[in-house]
Image (cartoon, rainbow, N blue to C red; front, side, top):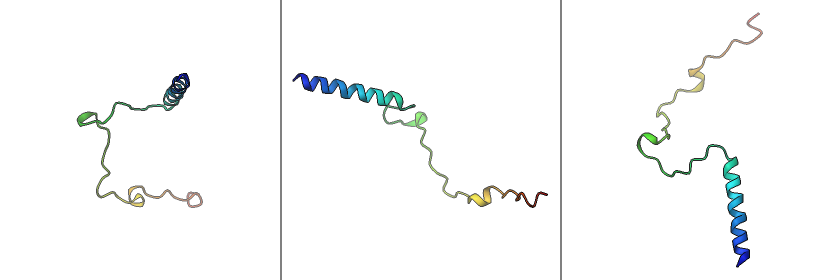
Length: 62
């Protein structure tokens, strides 16, 4: 019986250590309304080539 208690304590300690090293971990569950940070992707995204013009090559700049 004592082995189960020691195993649980070791496992809980390991879990707390991993969670503390994980950074910003949100354990508060599902969010709704203003607290939700999930955003949908835009339906019609512009291609990357049209969004940013290409920079001139270094040999053309001279």
